[in-house]
Length: 377
Image (tube, rainbow, N blue to C red; front, side, top):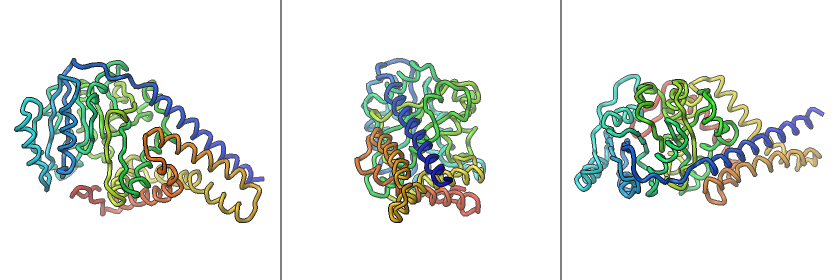
């Protein structure tokens, strides 16, 4: 009897995940306005770049082809060890009316992580009314700035972010990077972000974020989240706490990005953020790990065991597994990923548990994680 109840619990939870994911897909598809604005307030496009010689040229080329006419591009070389500064200098010489390249200041010994420090420095050079921060490995369609301005104004918000299109070029990336969609698949109703004032209902992806200048300055910019690895999430929460309005939309048609290259970079890149995302609360991380094990891994194990021993509960286990698989199929196909990526879902969650443990161990016991030549602790 208890086993049967447990299986029905699995089914109900998976049904909830399916409904939540479906509602978020609908929100992403219906909430974004088409990019209509071609001129207006000045936009400062701000790009931190550290060892980005392979990416920064493609990013700048895409940003130079925008339909929005009133914008500037400021790129900060964050102490790169490759040809990043040489490439930036060349772009500045060829496009002095649009691009400004600056060198970053030394990273303070305490209280600052590298990326928020670079982002805060960039804001000092910005002259626009809107600050659009974007990563150096993003590729922008010609209407990405127009899209951001159009939606920021139409929705009457002070901050906007969204899901870009992820490029997964290796098996390791296809296995691990989809874990970044977990938050909006099983936890966060995206429509609540826009309609509630509760900071807990906040979400952002730092690959592209846009602020109204007044909102950015009111919270002190990224200096308020200087010691955060997941600075995008925490600055979004601070904005809501200060009374500003934020929104999360769909950027897939306008921006793409290869977030990490290969298995190792994907594993370490995701892992470095996990414990910080949970505000370094061990109990919260542990509870999340238990939920992942119980609802994303255990139903698969039970299904296999029941099929092998002929247990009639195999039917209920199969329903739970099917709902889980359908949920991920809908989410990942909606994000434009290749057909086989959702089929890796049963393997992804054990690796997610490993990334959670790696994040906890590295940030708790002091050795930290090496990322772009810096140790993150």
